[in-house]
Length: 332
Ligand code: NAD
Ligand code: LMR
Image (tube, rainbow, N blue to C red; front, top):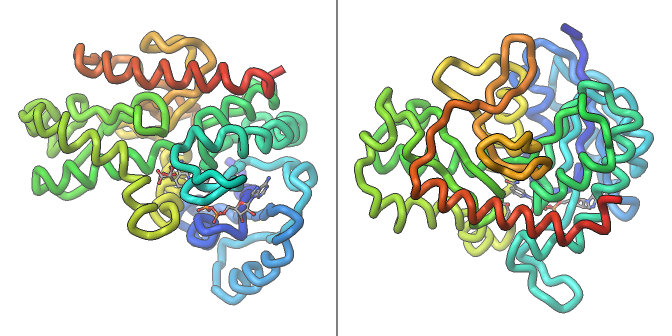
């Protein structure tokens, strides 16, 4: 295994990045590897990154390698192992006179970013590069990027780890269990209010979720809306979208991909469907994933869904299909 890893981060002067970037080089996320960072921003703010680089240098990070910054994504993408595509506009802001309320409203604004970035990743990134799209609407941005990259050996993911962590937190409060005891937490579908966080297949303190919770009224009326709307609740309370929890979720996704998944567990991210669980091929859909001993990431295929779960999951699949339709023009 290589002892160096090159990580490209876009949106590097933004809120999530400020919490994320130092922890990429703290020796925990990538273990003993030396981490080379390439930070990317738009031309208007790229000079701010000089300050961030100063802070990184001042922070004593023995695992930090070379740190560079640029407004040229093409240049940044060469031989990178990981791409963390955070750069994009968050909701909660007013854009062209309209308040951006839903993540899907961001499609028109952010979708285009991922055409050029995807192309550069396909041309210049490592053949086995992993790409985590954080910028919203994450699933469909990843779809656009993956299509432009056109390289199946690279793994494109959209982030649903934050939704899984939120679900674990709600379950841990309900069952008075530490979050670490909630395993196999699956987020099916889109990173949007249609996502389906699957309590029934979670494993809570060694028991099945169905048995440990045994209260579908609570699942339907409290658990699901809380998790599905948590992003909005944070925006309403903070006046800005989640940043430190999103950064932690991105780090947890990297850690999940870099380490073999324990038996009986899985991690959550959205990847391209191969038709599994009846999802139309190609859609970037939230699935239960496992990292195998050889480092490859696979969909966990032995999960049974109740009729209730299937019905809810289908709503999210339909939404992903309509988002794909809406960005057809970016997918030539
Ligand atoms: P932010 O506005 O603080 O930072 C975004 C940064 O991206 C800005 O500095 C901006 O200049 C930069 N940027 C814009 N276009 C770029 C481009 N083409 N190349 C490089 N940089 C570019 O926003 P934030 O709070 O850091 O959130 C970033 C994104 O992450 C938003 O779209 C938000 O909705 C999303 N998000 C996703 C999740 C998730 O779970 N998937 C969670 C939280 C936030
Ligand atoms: C979140 O879930 O916190 C992010 O996707 C930001 C948002 O717009 O909700």
